[in-house]
Image: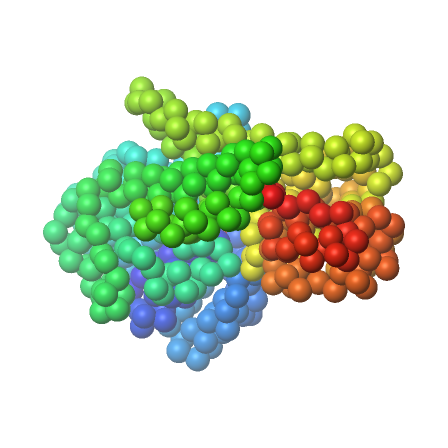
Length: 434
Ligand code: NAD
């Protein structure tokens, strides 16, 4: 079986490499020539643990992976073609921008020679795969192709493990022939007892948005509970822990923090709301999640201002962590970046450090200082803000850091430290919801 993956971003490249790991001949295609050329040299344009090793293995040793910037060359003898291009939020409107998806669908249509399956792996609103079918059917006979929705659930930072050991695989399909081939593709996971869920195309598309929106709801919920804990003297970590023991609730995604960010949750929540509006359906729960999360960074920074009597002009903040989560260099919709921006605009001096994301951060936040280490970022600081919970920040030597600082205040926005320990070291400590 020969696979073609269109788009070599997080989802495309990781899917391509993991399918190669299953033993399939895979071609990854991208319109970005520079990206393809770097990949051919074994270099990735983004950081993901284990990715470069896997790339070099399948590029140079097994030779199961090849890279191409020409879709027509790549599609020769293809059995399954995956669309994994980006679906960002349309400016101002909230809905998903499907320009790249439809463009790729049209390009695929120009290159279908024998029967193949076109799979939407990009996160797309319900109805998109059916639209793709129409686009292709304008140029290709119906017997020569089928369309499938196969949403991806991997998480940046643990993407390879997630792809190789997913909680489930969803196959949205209306053709027995296509479903048989898709099940053959995922047979290595089926043998590991991964649930393979077959649904209609529409259900598969909704499953992805409903899953991300539900997880986002858990985060927004616990953040509001954290506010209540702060107001009344509770501790949100104790509350979340006890809640999490209830199997109906579960302990995951109950970590209070500065709000959800990243390339998926914020845009998927907005796109889900936009779809509901289009079909005149009440999705007000998700609407509130979006509203409360949008306010979150502003609310957090207000608490920081309060510690400085609302005057942070000239104060130096050491921000630790810029990526939206640990183990990735992705800063798309990162709350750390939003918080740094708010503080900077209010006249603060920002010294930031991140183990992997500083190059990407410099593009969106060019005016702040970037440090080579935690220690350097703390020199002269009036406060440390732990914004992303990288492992490197979990065992900081606060005694040494305090010697470098002007003012020992710590805002632990990821609740990774114990208040008493830091108070004993004569730090002023603020944790979320405690
Ligand atoms: P990305 O922005 O990292 O990568 C998209 C790639 O597609 C880029 O390399 C771009 O050059 C390429 N591309 C765009 N138009 C093209 C064209 N016409 N031909 C060839 N290549 C083209 O995107 P991503 O983060 O991998 O996300 C892709 C999709 O997967 C999105 O819909 C996203 O919501 C979804 N998704 C992402 C994640 C994640 O963690 N990033 C997880 C699950 C699902």
